Image (tube, rainbow, N blue to C red; front, side):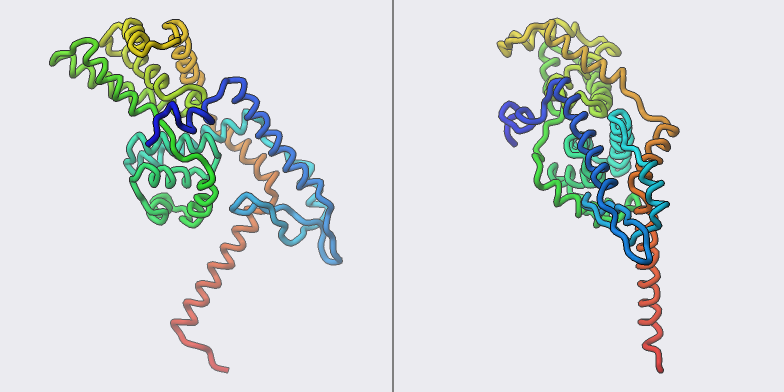
Length: 330
């Protein structure tokens, strides 16, 4: 694996706060423009039907199923409102937690969970695909069938989105490895003996939990993994009081001949802490409101898909029955 300093992660996926805000705004604006184009699309009419409706396909493209009555369609369009930036962020938080729950259910290592979260933050792919791709890139292979079966999801959907993900930068750096490195370094820094070794182990375990919290925020898009690890260790050290953390930071900077000062590094760690403090999981009421807005944009596509699946299921059942009973006679 390449070094972080020369990686695409460092070159392309660490942003300033202002850049991140502008990217969220631009993404939201693209969604609004796409919705407007669909709703303002010239209406196709025929003798028996009204206007067409939009249907979002699994690859993200748009198609147009059989038209519905024009009046109903116009009313639906008038109710369609795109999500705000804040609502989009609530959706990300919701699905990032779903992603973490699945990783916990399968007992995946922290590294896989972190990699999947970074994929989701970067690309907004279908979240199960992020888990599947993370397992492959971290060489902890789980089949799409096994992953889908474990949570009652169609594995084909996972594979379809994986092909989209192949176009992206897949090598990522999580804070867990530098966290281990800092723990080893601290052992030497404090010249740890038997009792302190256990304290360092406890510090490490608490720090991993702190990293888990940090990974659910936007901090991984703003800071390198080493600083994320240091922020987690500083928070954990407030619990265990293993060492003088400011002295340790000074030791790191002096040994690395860093151009940064302790005050600059401390400020970065403070900002990371603030992301964790501000983190908020959306309420059930918020998610229901967001879901209603999404359905107003999608129209009846979900209903149409259900009808298609029901029809397909009936067709399979009929085919199975015919095979068991043989062909009918005239």
